[in-house]
Picture 1 (tube, rainbow, N blue to C red):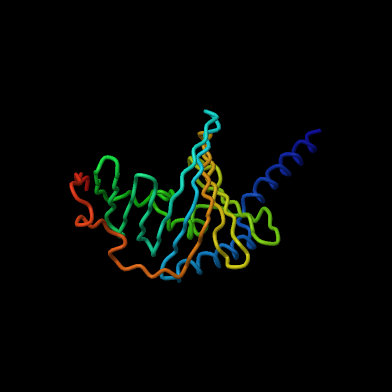
Picture 2: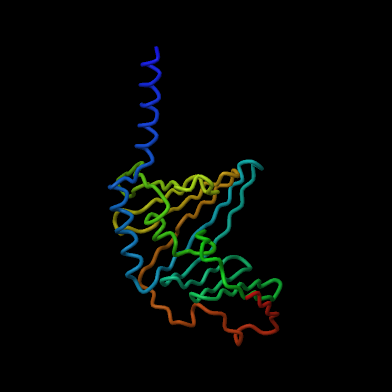
Amino acid sequence: MKIRIIIFVLLIFWLTDTSAQTDPAALKILDRFSANALSAPSVSIRFQLVNDDLAENSSDTLTGSVIISKENYKLDLPNNTVWFNGNESWSYLEAEKEVTITRPDKKDNSFQSKPSGIFTLHKKGYKTRLIDENASAWIIDLYPEDVKSEIIRIRLTIGKTATDLKRIEYKRNDGVVITILVTDYNLKLKPDSETFQFRSGKYKDVEIVDMR
C-alpha cells in the first residue's frame, strides 16, 4: 500500500513539473514573434479590449490603438491618451482637460503600462506551453514562475502567415479576465520622436499635474 502511495505521489509530481516546463516549440514561435516586432520601426495595433469580471458577472468593452517603438509608445483609449518616451509618461484625460506627468514603475509589465512587454514576456519569469494550433494560428499559454503573481495565465494567439498577434488574454486571480482582440497589426509605420510625447501646443486650457 505504501509503495502505491509513493508511486502516486511521484507521478503527480512528475506531471506537475513537466507541465510547468518551457515548451521548445512555443519558445521558437515566441522568439520569431518577438524578433519580427522588435526589428520593425514600430508596431501599430488597433484592438478591442474586453474586461470580464467573473466574480461580479459583468463585462465591459472598449476600442483603442497603440503605437509601440522599442520602449516608447502612444496609447489611445476612449477619453484617455497616454504617451511614454522611455522615461516620462503623460496621461491626458480629455473630459477633465487634465494631463498627469509621471515616471512609471519599470516593474509594471501590464499591457496598459508597458505595451512592449507582450514581445518579451516569455524571456523571463514565465513558463510557456503550445496548447493548440489550427490552420491559421498557434495558441500559447504563459504561466508566471512567481506563485504570488496576480496573473494566473497569459494566453497568446499568434497568426501563422505573418507571425502577428491576433489575441492576448490575461487571467487574474481576482476573477478578472482581460482580453485584447487585435483588429489590425502593422509593422510598417515609421513614427517620429514627437509621436511619443505630449505636445502642449496642441492642447489648449489643459491643467498639468506633475507627479514626478
